[in-house]
Image (tube, rainbow, N blue to C red; front, side, top):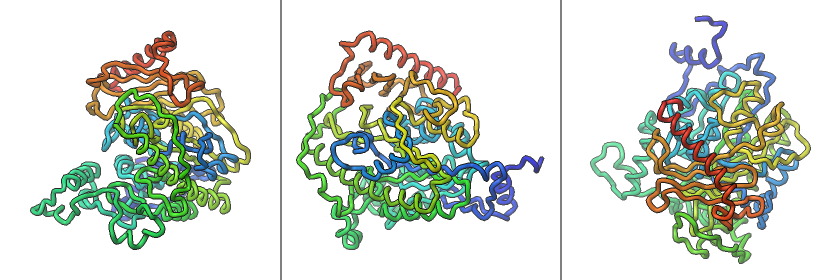
Length: 519
């Protein structure tokens, strides 16, 4: 072997094989910092701090004109950052949204389509972590088990993974500790077992588990934290209870002492439901506001307006709490000078819906509150605000960060370098896509799903393969109708026809690549 071309990561693996260094078992925290030394080429690179706040809809941010003052600290951050006003997730729930962000490809390529899904094997080497592994110390944390499944897939490119249970007050799930090599299967199986109410008394491994996992705060935690969190303790709906404050403290400590240059990927669960806000934010938006109901087009869940208004208020109050904790992190990063050599990126994997009889995001719709998410990027030492209104996609983040690190954009990437971050002008007339296909078979051509295409001010949504919606469309003018009240599909036939042709052609091309094994 040519030791002159040996990378730091390969060197660590050789040490592990020789019993000199520990690479770490799957899913368990990996500590390689003592073996990490920045190369000459890496030492001058800026740090990359990527903070993902789960289920953060741009439509609920006062930063973008929302009527409730939910995000004063994000607005403060925006004054010294680049703000993207029309930024889109790749899907409407965690797996497709996060996988698109990390791979720079749409769900029809990476195939992370399902609730407890994973990306295709080739994307173990086609992701942000792998692309920067030889130049950056990479540290990651998430509260979200679905994201943890992806980190498990990408773990060979990660230097340190801190698990949900490591920052938890109470961690109920246990199967992942027993079967770390089969993370997604073990967590999914345990969830089914608990949800069924089966106690499985004859099971050697699982008989000690509680009968159910849900978002209700256990009695002992209510006694300890009930005054501080009257609605219950924040949790990930799967038995992990935590304090957001602890995660913010941990991030501060991590970025202050981790080896540089670092890539930090921190995916926090709030403001994802359940909306367990801190006491000083309870009822701060009890203002009686009742938004105008929107037309019901597809897949209603029969939620009343009264129900939706209450959930919307609780979400907004939880969001205000999250914003306050973000402000505390921002102050720390500025006070310590970390932002002087760090790109700080704030975004989300998807949004949340409180309309059309639907609450949540695990739906077959792709309305704006579900897929339009914030993106704010602070460049090292940035002092002035910059606003970008051109539509952008989460698949653009990977090529942008690679460009910052001096890396070429790979040919498999479906994104482009974000405006103001590249040397050439990006294509402002390109199409932006989002995909929902959790009912479609894995690694199969898309025959059932919902796909949206955005070009400039217009957005077309296609529903296909469903029993009740075989091939239906909706068209919206997002400039004149950002709330998507008026479906223009029948009245704007020329625009509808053009976008329909482009969307069908793109789906057909994706299906061809799946069939021929190109993705």
